Image 1 (cartoon, rainbow, N blue to C red):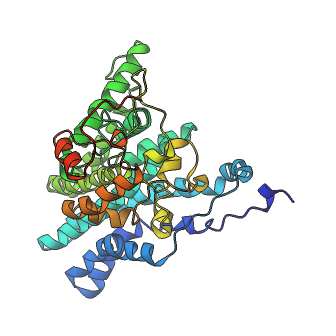
Image 2: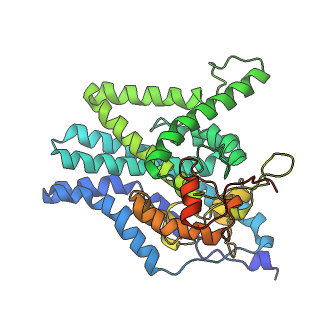
Image 3: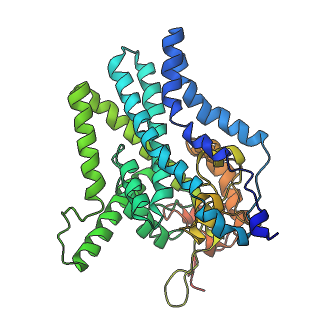
Length: 388
């Protein structure tokens, strides 16, 4: 029996956990309607930001890899893509339900806030699904990526991530790569508008080569934007214009979850500049990796980010663990809490960054405003050329 035919994915049915994610929005309201206690609306938020990180600590890291001989069969197994297809309508329904619930029931402000955050979390899971689908080469999956990015108005991510971030990752030029010494809030101000500008510039250049106006239906940013406008308009006509701030806040929180993931994934890591002035090829060590089992199940292996950047079109079920890569101390949800507390983040991650690059300052992407003080604080060499 060959290795490929003998291989069995032990996580095969664990991926169904991703289809449970939309139930987060319904769980809080269901408990609230049953008990009448507003704090029950916060349980989904507590689950994601507290319980899941605890599960990640309890479960052993998953360092299992499929053998390369089994990867073609694994990639062609349609079961895995059917899970992603099924998640698209479920996440749309869940986001819509969250908005409807706020409009339907009179809640105190802290109850409204809980539902906004939970709905935003579901929107964030949608963006993660759009990330998985958007890298694929079939027309169906690429359109599903645009459709699932539309509820939160983040359709430009389809262009920005694939054609911008993957090209510029771990360089000072990339707005989606966080710099050493840069806190999450400063990164937000740089990343969100920078990503939109880069996406629009890339798509405008593509269309110019086709002698097509930027504002046309062939524009792959305009396509999901139109879906967003129609969707939000329908919600406002159905639930009243007063629901628009709720939609915007939930969408912002969803998009901020992506920003936080970007902040975590490449913090401080830098590709060296070669003699020709271009950055070296992106390698697995240019991303922070995490093998925490539970959160990887919920995120389609997003946390095996190193292999993703090395092989962008590889499907989630085939992504691999590599030895001796920069490793996060927790899964993404635990790292989110670190990121939202900058002193804690710097205390933990700056030292891990130095260890990951062997204290080689040429491999660190510094915040320019703090570079001199950081070099001095950590006893690194004075600033010099990063060309190798």
